[in-house]
Length: 316
Image 1 (cartoon, rainbow, N blue to C red):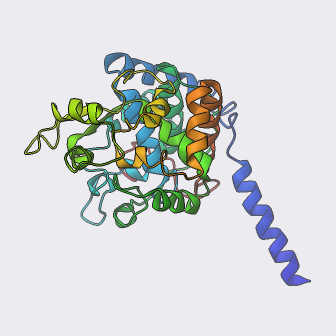
Image 2: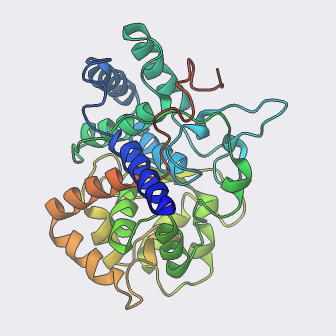
Image 3: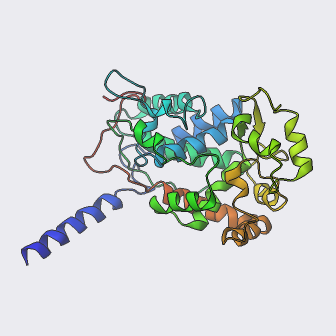
């Protein structure tokens, strides 16, 4: 009986912590928090449209490494390695300064209340909406990590651009995300750019899963020798607008990254989801928002865990 009571107590505490994440978490403590973040993010994207993709990606890279805890924001110290310096993030992940600016704006309204982790999550939603994507209700109430986790970032918790569909599915499953979540979240690649290094191999190895004309066009920006850091849009048609063109590209063998194209053409269950999203943009938008909310729940710190950082790049 004693053991049973302990289990019930632990379950109740677990549910209580999860329940703390809510769209209305700051309604009493900082009622202008979300609007302040939104204004800051819209200003940043109005200056550089590409930043929308970068902020969505920043949220993804934060959540997949030890949960949505703003650990990706921490700068290295003599006693702590930074996730920013991991292979998957170094000179690739962007938007840190935008989150810092939003944090500063929120701190001026209600200091010490809103976490960097929540700002990253809200920024991703606001970025999506600004460029034509869905507006979904972000759950907030996260707290910030007091450590960074570069070893985890380097160990495979962030997908490699050459990952197979099976590898991607297993990674997402470990994070509590299913196949539909994988395909929906991959649709963020309707925005943004990629370095030639991440896809050049496909252009020159006569891959059967890439359209010949598409490959020829991409080679102009990505020569076989050099140009590895040259950027190319993930979607050539509407690179700065959130739409479902990404899925139409996949059906035409015009997915830029290997991890894009593996979602269609292999006969796997993802084929039907790609086809569905290519025909039904509203379903894609709805599923993307739902998957982002679900991703935002990954190992979130709540209650008395972690802290509310004063600045996002350093522990208090």
